[in-house]
Length: 401
Ligand SMILES: Cc1cc2nc3c(=O)[nH]c(=O)nc-3n(C[C@H](O)[C@H](O)[C@H](O)COP(=O)(O)O)c2cc1C
Ligand code: SF4
Image: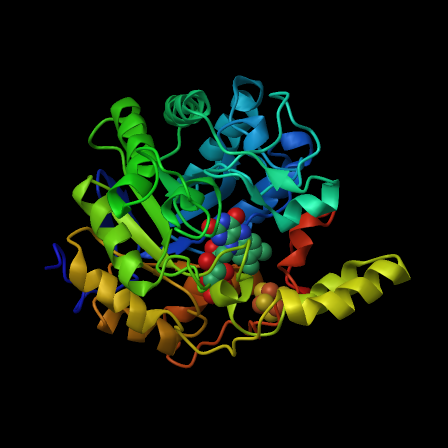
């Protein structure tokens, strides 16, 4: 299939994405920056994204915007509500004044939460009652199953988020359907054990994600770009495998998603499958102030974070299968760190590219790569930036210190 073939495109030239025009095909991937103290998009977040915007990407993504306070994994995350309307609107306007388009990644953690500041008077819930290891950090062993009322409430929060995001001026929205968060907990047979219309078959497990997409589309209209980030595989036994990931992509494509970002892995069960490279345990150990927690992470680290060596464009072959199976544009993600990587991705026919760590290392990635066939961002995939999401100052590339 393939509605658009980008085989001969110059990724540094302008391109249309659904209803909007980007100055090139480079996008900043969602990387939760840890720069929203008290849930407010403050000056650090502004400086971070202004740096990225001036470096030349066509679109930047404000990551992990949750649909309600209880959708946060940690209480330092931003949730979409009227109280931050002014801050968000001026941030978006300032970014747009540089010529960059601004997308917001809209999410809900489901049961994957260590948030202590809960507002609904009930514990974080998922599709089915289950033991949730992350809850141990805050003394919650089990997450209950969502009722039909909870599901209706959740869909309502996504609908309200869509109206809010359109009102404050986002150019696009990226719905997070992957990485083990709320919607992906319904998609994955590992976490969804329901026997009602939201569980069992693929169609039933996709019901809630598709209802969310439909509710948001109704608010946003046909011309507003809605992107979807998925996990092609959870990378864990009994979870979404590549065959199922293909079906997930096809279901979203048929339902009218404007573009897909095929990622892999989950934060809950197999984080390193998403990242590859050095274990995040190293950075976690460095961040612990107290010797007992340092020792605990040192012992538990190898059990919690499996090792996967880094390879350039490590998701390319799997993403090609998605590209071949759907008609919407595909935004490649995963291991684009050099000019050679960029060329490989676009030669393979992908429509856009999202870049995470290499843009944290070098915010001028696009400007530096445009005329340099030997360009290398210098990101070593040490993954020290990843645990910094919970650092009071937020993320940074430690190699730039
Ligand atoms: C510090 C950091 C935070 C991240 N936070 C998010 C996030 O909030 N949402 C998300 O979908 N992915 C998140 N990711 C994953 C990236 O979007 C991307 O999938 C991954 O880093 C692989 O792309 P890369 O090789 O270009 O870095 C994060 C990555 C990093 C390094
Ligand atoms: S800390 Fe820097 S070099 Fe290491 S993975 Fe993050 S961006 Fe790359």
